[in-house]
Length: 333
Length: 235
Image 1: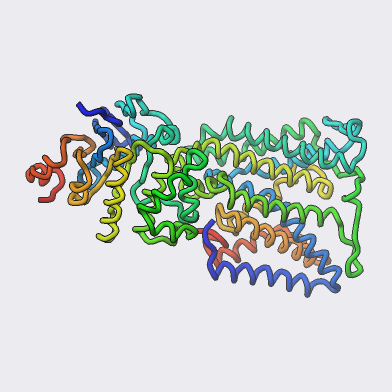
Image 2 (image 1 turned 90 degrees about the horizontal axis):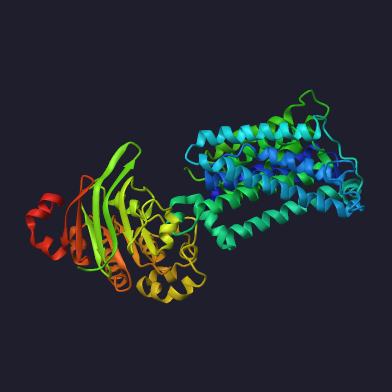
């Protein structure tokens, strides 16, 4: 969480301004322009939900959690299962109204994500804190195992969301285009979450401890603070937020064992691009990458360059690192 | 015999494969300032870090208030009432002065209770309260590092090289502050500057090549030019 300086602000303004300008030039109407922006923000917010945990956990614990995408996947499956009839957790009898069932399904997904987070941190990761390479291999292995367990429980067939419920199906009109209220809801939720986490980090004692721990973990311990407990809390929170991402993405993207992979790759780009361990960098980087992917998706329509959206985060990462080698808000540690 | 708040008995500490402390013993009498003296690389900092549990000793005892604390986690050691001011200050650069002090609270209200005392010792910090620690000068950062150790009710302060790299006027201010601290808690100090150390401390322990070959009252050491020359290389 290094203090930003003029060059990073200029880089942010130039890149976001450039993306908005390209989106505007590419779209033939204000309506299309609005749709691209909303799509970019929607993707950016989902990305933030994976990247924020990745970034804070890395900053505090020096652990790059490759299982973060798997938690996103678990969130999507649990929410899907709880919302639809005939699944493992069938809530259709208990809560017949799908509009009421959805928030419960999301909360359930977050709880499952948090519980799995505690198990991973306490049970597997803790003995390996002194061995960074082992941690990396472990979290990667856990992601693979989680995907296999999901296949065992829910089979290998991807699920498309079929349950109809209010917010998902509602649209509003602007500049002659239909906009999805659900996407707007996810964007709003993402913004609220960005602010809440920022307040947690800035105002609360635990936030001060996390920020201090990112700088100097040893000194935090020397002040009488049990860093292990803080690790568990932060790791669990990161996994729970990733599961929340999967749960709110499921109505649009469904549930599949590969759903988390794309977000994990993009989130790693966001964390590096924003500056390793910087919360502000992660929030801004998520929006940036989300917008860039949406612009690339628009640009790729009707061309033979269908891979453009998937390589865009890495192109953006290269661009930012050329401008600022330590990332937007990174310090040169 | 004077009661000791801290008794380090024959500790051996390894860092990686290196045997850094090869039998260090230190006694800190209650209410005194004891200084660890010795050349660079002798093992003074490792002694403090071993007491704090940051580089736990492989052998030997560390008795705080008569109870062995060797092998405990650093946070558990700190919670017993031991404050640590490490070498190079280790203040949190991204946190404001207020946050740097607030994080040191062990009980709610610690900072509110101690604020007047802290700002009386270090008036500059009051003025700088909302600035990030990284914006402070070296001397101000050192004051903040010492002030941070004063927020909770510590009975023993471990202070590592407080005068390092500071201007004489700042050193004077810090020395006055450390003398005041000793009125309410015991202090184990590492200090390279013999003149500063001899004015502050009542007891000394020489650390040489990972051992503690000499200890006693500082007044006696000041009189013993040969001993000073032998272990510290100053006349």
